[in-house]
Amino acid sequence: MKNKPFFLLVALWFSATCCTGNSTASDTEQQPQQSDQWVTYEGGDGPGEGKHIVLISGDEEYRSEEALPMLAQILAKRSGFTCTVLFSLNPESGEIDPNQQSNIPGLQALETADLMVVFTRFRELPPEQMRYIDDYLMAGKPVIGLRTATHAFHYAKNKEDQYAKYDFQSSVPGWEMGFGKVVLGETWVSHHGDHGNEGTRAVINEANATHPVLTGVDDIWGPTDVYTVGALNDATILLYGQSTSGMTADAPINTEKEMLPIAWTRTYQLPGGDQGKAFTTTMGASVDLQSAGLRRLLVNACFWATGLETAIPQQADVSFVSTYTPTMFGFDDFKRGQFPADFRIKKD
Image 1: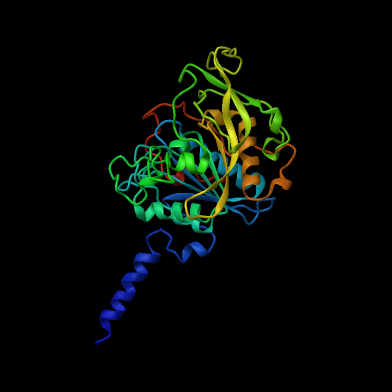
Image 2: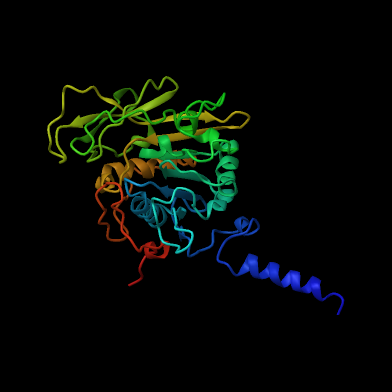
């Protein structure tokens, strides 16, 4: 019986790694596993078959926790991508809590990801979670950023954290203005439109009208306002945004405000890392994605980012898989009592 302590340790290890519902490093070598802490939509037939997209939600205002599951369902069921959606969770109850800035379980899924889609705002993730994002970006793998991803991280409490360089206000050499500037091309600056009173009408940049991401994209309007974006000298601008004097699609253009970029592609490289490609749009709130044109833009961007640009359909099917009734943007207006499992596709 002198080996009893050894067997006890083995039993405890097995219980910790296999029975908690969380993935271990070895798990990530397999297909992403379903969990109470995230939701996975299995792909299948379609151009994206065999590709894995990880979509990371976590913002207090624009309802990324609603937008990304809907987009992931379309990518999985219409185009064949396997999609894993992650959420900011209350660590005690397991509820989706966009105001929880330091807990996004499941980021180990990035170890098998072919694409990372980011829609976070001012997150301050602990090193044991943030390291998966850092490893992914150091490898130069593709990134798509939506709306507040320009200011995805803010280390207000832990300024000495090893990942505080990702902060949108970073002054670390080589990391000036953090993830937004270094990876996506721009950080948070200001609202260019009148937030809550003006929407955004997209205008195709004719100089790049044949870019594959714009295939089949024609009409885009959304109720979020145009963000201020500075010079993008190292980017390919696909869309400009006009401010609309009102919050409906038929509202007139505010001709007193200049058009600014709202969608672009670029090449990024972290200091010491490999080169990768990125697509960014400053639109993307859950209510913006009622626009089929915007959904098509994002689906096309996923094809482009994963090296499937030649497979982009002339008119990608972006019809909703489940009923979609998005919540209007606003702070603290998220739906309470929701869990990741609530976003699984309901079977008839």
